[in-house]
Picture 1 (cartoon, rainbow, N blue to C red):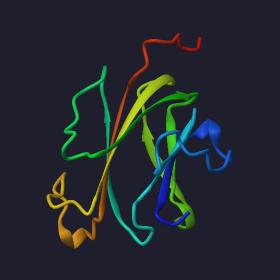
Picture 2 (cartoon, rainbow, N blue to C red):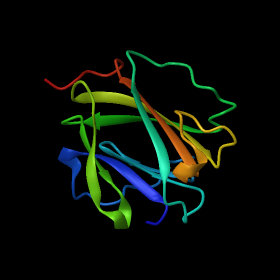
Picture 3 (cartoon, rainbow, N blue to C red):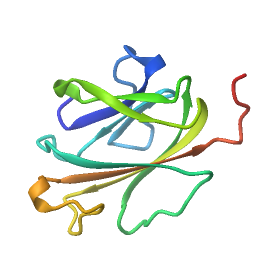
Length: 141
């Protein structure tokens, strides 16, 4: 799992690496977990930004040329980060459990680094994760 990290809902711990998302060569996903790969397995540091929106929002397709969109079913909406051989750490928490959409943008070795990153950060990959409620399905009681 070099060059890979994941966000896993706390209720889905121990389920292992999900299957590859159909149509993507860099995302593995199940209803409660998503794992992302960098293009270069030797990348040791990536920049990650998590955004929560009320609904779908715009994304710069030219800058985020690698994108996927997928539904998630999050029993707790509290994530831990699976850092492959580096272990795990606490992750983001969404406002409420339930059904969510997630759009992931990936950019490798960007010419312009977002979010005030610098080359000294050794950033070689950037990921943008945008969450919004999935209002097209009924939520759990």
